Length: 125
Image (cartoon, rainbow, N blue to C red; front, side, top):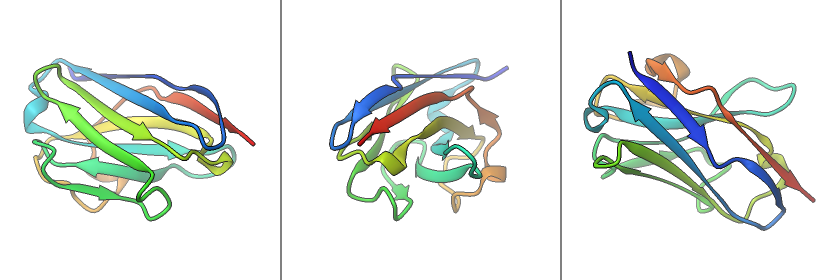
């Protein structure tokens, strides 16, 4: 059974930075592409970022491009989302996800097979 556990969320002022972590256990993380999604209050969950099994290729939502960076450490079975220049509209519960393929896909939820429980990020103005 694959388990994903996010951490690193919290309260931050606008313009600040946070790094989210996603620890994966149960299978060989290094063969899976991973992604981050978020769900703001009252909104549907949306795609944020994704990277291939080796981190060589990345894909971002337009709303976070240039501010967020996805990375991973396959030796530590951990993925990361580095968030900078945070805005109040980035406030959401952030979820990491993994898919049983090494390629990124196109950012759809149904491409991912495993999900974490989420970590809350609140950006104050």
